[in-house]
Image (cartoon, rainbow, N blue to C red; front, top):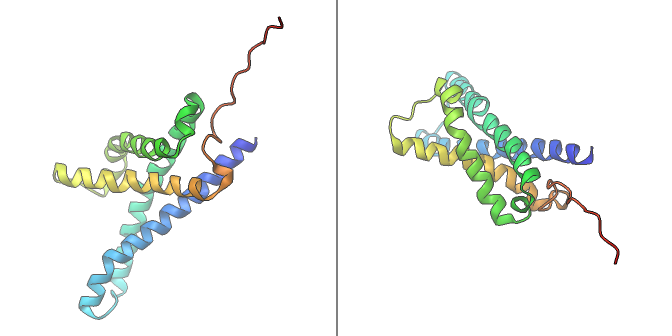
Length: 163
């Protein structure tokens, strides 16, 4: 039960980190336009940006985070060595996210976005999968409760023969 609660807290904190990171990146992308125009977007533009940001969060970022998280928990339980090293966690979380991206793109993200080319597809894959991986990794780097190996299955103990 403790591992389940720990996993839920990890997912909730990671979702918060992902959404805050997304807000920071979106603000950084919007800032040059605001500076060049000398004013903030009007009410219609703010509403359109809000709809766009909400769609990106609900159709791409949060589903990617949930799929990457659930797959990583399963991988960590099956192959505990993968969850015990930070470098492997970082690469593994990104790889799992990248593996889920085509399905996510096909069934959710394609409603609001079209790649238009391989370069755009790869950049979007990197941003979405990388964002989810980073959001999952940051809480594990900060909290001792999420230390490497905390989601690994307990080792199986065999009978020791007495001689």
